[in-house]
Image 1 (cartoon, rainbow, N blue to C red):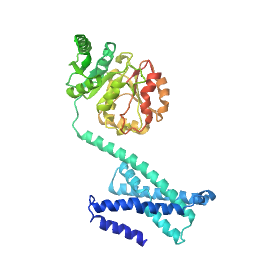
Image 2 (cartoon, helix red, strand yellow):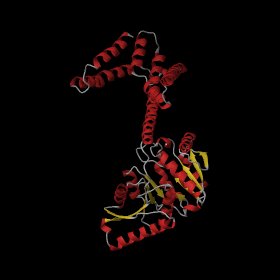
Image 3 (tube, rainbow, N blue to C red):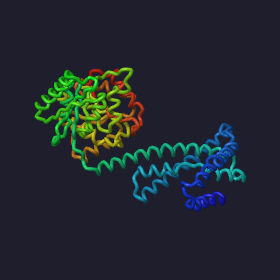
Image 4 (cartoon, rainbow, N blue to C red):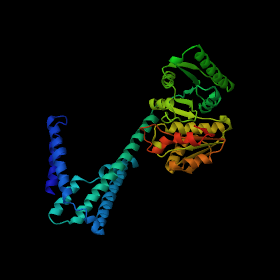
Length: 419
C-alpha cells in the first residue's frame, strides 16, 4: 500500500505548486499520458489470460461478486451522503456515477497482490471485468444525472425569471388554412393577454411586386376578419426577405413573439429533411415554441386531444409552456386531454398543472416505445386532435425515433388533425 498512498500524497503536494498552464505541467501530462499510463496498462494486459474466463465458472463468479460489491457499496455511499447533506436524488446519482468507476488504483492493488502470490488468476481476470463493468456504469450514470441536473437548473432559472407575456404570431401563406390557423391562435391565446395576435405574410425579394403585395394584403384581411368575428385584436404585417424562413425569423424577432403558429402541407418530399426546408430552418434557428399544424376541420369541433410525449420531456426548458398550452386548448374546446407517456412524465404534468391551478379532464395511457406510435394513430378519431411533442436536435430528448415521426405522419396519417 505504501507506493500507492505515497504516489497520491506526492501528487496532491506537488500539483498545487505547478501552474496548470505552465510548460512543466504540459510536459508532465504528456509523459504520463503518452508513456507511463500506456505502459502500465499494456503490462497488466499482457499478464491477463482470457482463457481463464472460459475454463470454469469460478472466474465469472469472482467477477460478478466483485462488480456487484463495488457498485452496491458505491451506491450506498452516495445514498448516505445524500441523506446526510440533504441532497436531491439527481445529486445522489451524480455522486454514484462519478465515484463508481475503478481503474488505476484497483489495477495497482490487484497487481501487487498477484505478484506476491496473495491473489490468483481468477481474481486478476475478475478485476479486469470489474473495471470494464464499473467504467461503463459510471459513464452512463454520470451522463444521465448530469443531463438531468443541467435541465433542472434551467427549469429553476426559468421559474425565477418573470413571466413573459404571450405574443402569438401566425404565419399565413395558404388562403385555405387561414381560418383553422387563426382559430387555433385564438384558442391558445391567454384570456387576459393584452397583446394582439400577429398574422404575418412573408414575400421573397425576387417575388416582390404589386401582385404579391396585393395577395399578402388579402391574406391579412382574411385573418383580421376571423379575429374580428371573435372580438379579438389583430395586427397584421408583411415582411420582405431573401427567403421565407429568414422572413419568419425576422418577424419573430421584431414582434418579440413567444409562439409561432404555422401550417404544414402534410407532404414530405425527398429534398426535405424533416418537415420541409422552411420549417427545418425555422426550428433550427429559433428557440421559440413552434406549433406545426395540419388541421382538416374547425378547432371548435374537437372532442379529444391525444398527446404523445417522449421520455424525459419534463426536463426540457419548454415543458411548462406546452403543458399549459395543451390544457388551455382542452379547456377552450371542452375536450378530454389524453397523455400517452411514461408514469414519471405524467406525474410531472399533473404537478405542474396543480401548481398553476389549472384543472382539466385528464387521462393517462402508459406509453414508452415510440415504435408503438402507429397504434396510437389508429386510436385517434376523426374529431380528435393528435399532438406530438418533439424536441430540437442536440437537446435532451434521447430518442432517435423522434426524427422519424414527421416522415411517418406524412406517409400514414392523412385525415387527422395534427399539431
